[in-house]
Image (cartoon, rainbow, N blue to C red; front, side):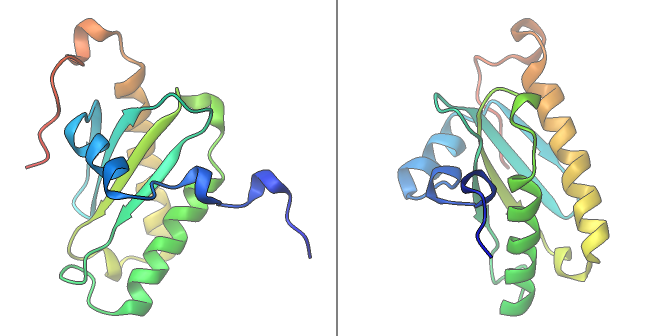
Length: 137
């Protein structure tokens, strides 16, 4: 079965190296925090959103669970409509307990946090304080 080119999650849709991740961490314009995950975002000059995943073994012990979380996050991100927000570089940081969520619960949380992130990015500059970086801590 062949997949349409735009349905794949290729390298153009991923943060690939430390420089890409650092750019988001250092120049974070918006964040959406939840008990089980944190989304950090920064606008990019590309035509598509890009995703980076940080699923630490410290927080998700079993590899099968880390891979499940990654798979669900990639699938959610892959199916996002491109026109909901300007092109973003997004990092998903998993927190302790995310591995205990059912797939449907995780998908719901991802959807809710994505909407919060987009709402924050789409606000006028005067109310978001985009000039400053967001604190991750």
